Length: 432
Image (cartoon, rainbow, N blue to C red; front, side, top):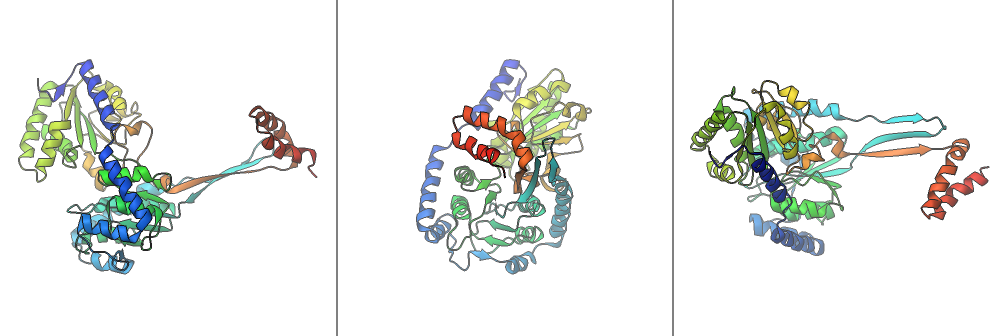
C-alpha cells in the first residue's frame, strides 16, 4: 500500500496528532525579524517604512506616491479586461447577497424586575485590508475582505499591497473599485501591518486588519493583535475531500490539487471507503501534475503533506472530520447532507459531487477567508459580524434597583470589593 494511504486507526490518530504539532509550531527566526521591523516602524515611522519598501520590493516610496486615491484606482481599473471585470461584478453581487443576510438585529426589552436591557450593534470605524503582491493577483481576496465590512457599515476601508513599479495591477484595481475601497497604500509585508496598526506620517492607523499574507504578515498580525483587531491567524490552505467510488477520480484529484497548488505547505487529504478508487485518484494526480502550471508547488505540497485515509463506513466519516477540523470540506458523496448534520468542526462545506471547493473561492457567496490549522474547532470564517461590535445597555429605576441591590451587594462583599457594594448601597439608602 502506498505511504500516501493509511487505514489503521493507530496511523490515522498519529497523522492527526502530527497535524496538531505542526499547527502549534512557531517560526522563531521570523518572529525575531518581525519584532525588529516593528521597533523600526515605531521609532522611525515613514523613514523605516520606505526603507523596507525599497529593500523588499525595490520600490522607491515617498509621502506622495505611497497613496493611490479613489480617482487613481479608477484610472488603473480602466485597463482591466472586460471579461474579468464582468466576472468580478458577478462575484461581488453573490458575495453581497450572501453576507447581507448576516446582519444581526438590535434588541431591547424590560424584564420582570422592571429593568430595561438591550444590545445594539455598531460598525468598526476603520479597517485595513492586506492584499498580497508580487507575481500574485488575488482580486477575490479584495472582494471577500471588503464587501462584508461595507455591509457592516465600516466608514473607512483602506488597502495595503506591495508594488515594484508603482503600477497597480488593473485586475486588483477593478476589484478595489467594485469593493469601494477608499484608499490604497503601495506597501506590503510586516512593515505595512505595523504602519496600519500604529500609523505613520503617511499612513493613517486603522482599528482592524484583515487579509491573507505570507508568514511574515501572519506573524505580524499575530503580534499586533491587542493594539488593533485582526481577522484570524491563517496558516497554509487545506482541504479534506470525502468521496465514495461513484466519483470521477480525475475530479477528486483536481480538487485536491486546487489546494496543493497554493503553497508547498498546503495540505490536501482524501477520505474514502474504497482502496481501488484511492489508487485511481493518485494516478490522476500524477497525470494532472504533468500539465499544471504550478506543478512544482503542487507536487511538493502533495508529496510532503498529502494523505489518503481509508475508512470502513463513509457515513461515519464525521468522526475524523471533527478531529481534523478542516478549512475546506468537500462531501462528494450521495448522502452529503446526512453527514453534514454531524459535522461540527469545519470552515466551509461543499456538498455533492458538483460542488468543488474552488467555486467557493470565487463566486458561491460564502466567505473564503476561513480558519486553518484545526482552529475551526473554535472559530468561523470571516463575515459581517467581524466588522461589528456589540454594545449592551442597562437601565434601572428606583424600584428595579432596589429589587436587584441585595443580591448584588452580597456578591460584591463576597468578592471583597466594598467599593462596589457601596456604589449600590448609597442609592438604596438614599434613593430620593
